[in-house]
Amino acid sequence: MDQHYALVYKCLQNDRKAQSELYQLFAGKMFAVCMRYASDYDTASDILQDGFVKVFNALSKFGFDGSVEGWIRRIMVNTAIDYFRKASKLHVMTDIDEVEVADSGSDHFLSKMASEEIIAVIQKLPQGYRTVLNMYVLEDYSHKEISEMLGISEGTSKSQLARAKALLATQLKNSELGYGRSEKIR
Picture 1: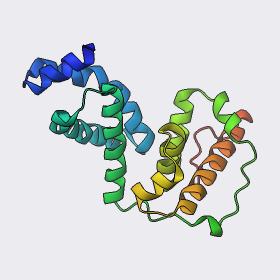
Picture 2: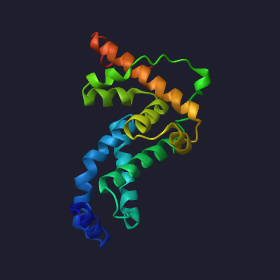
Picture 3: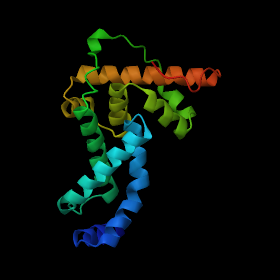
């Protein structure tokens, strides 16, 4: 039996030490996931806390057929999405037909940035852009899945991704040229 499976089993037996150990084992990684969706530390902390409440409430539904970390990560992502859906911050999105964004190889810029810089830039993106970027690029959801989860069209999902990539590329270019590393993306 996988060591994480054994830990989950102990948690299911209401072993408080095991519950604390499970939290400590995954809190850091899951906080990083929450930070990618949140615009600040406090919001990420709230999402993390809500996510772990959901994890512990749903442990009996864990099927012991996949990665514990992957299962917890999915709950965190869904918690972040729910958090922002409830806050009604995603309705700033525009349909793809209304936008023309030149996406000329902006992905290579991401590979040149340190992970801390990427997270900082992602946090400055408008909420809709940030959410779609995280879901598509980092969580590997399709545009169809994103549209269903967020209640938006596939075109809107594609538009948000293209705009997010363009803003990231602009921010990196500014960083490379020494312009306003701390400037907020608009």
